[in-house]
Each structure stands twice: as C-alpha cells, then as structure tokens.
Image 1: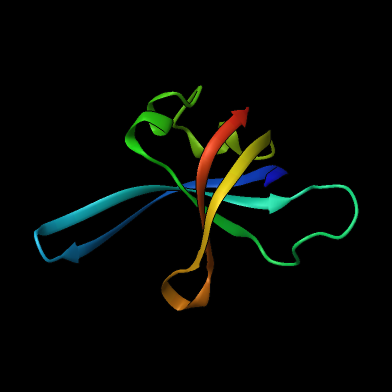
Image 2 (image 1 turned 180 degrees about the horizontal axis):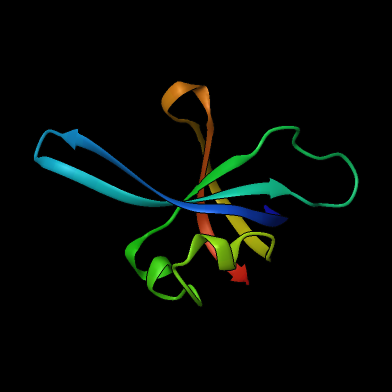
Length: 91
C-alpha cells in the first residue's frame, strides 16, 4: 500500500531487549493522502539501510518534507501507537 505523508520528526527509540540495548530510528509521519486519511500520526520504523539513505539526520531539516512510503507491515507499538514498516519510495 502506498501512502503520501509529511515528516513530522525523526526520533530514536531505545529500550532494553533480551540481548542488550536496542536503538531504532523512527520517522513520525502525518498522512497526506488524497481522500480519507489517518487521523493520528504513524511511526515508520527505519532499517539501518533506510536510515543511511536519508538526506540528513537533522530532525528540524526533515520536518515538513513530503515522503512517499510503501507499507508492508502495520502493527501496534508501545502505548498503542501505530507502527508501520516498508520501503521509502520517494523523499
């Protein structure tokens, strides 16, 4: 499923896992698709490869930029927030 969105912020989530500290970069996105939209923001979980391909890692410079993502997985995250995973089609 393709979704056009706007980047709200780039954050880092870390927690203590079974094998030690786990740190994951997270893009918070606001749905900007035409027609019916998600009311809440979504957390896009970045892989290391996707994180390396970002034009910058400065959250202030990424905020407000349009992005198109291909969603392959949707699940509940911490605190009931929606987590999505997939590919970045265009940034």
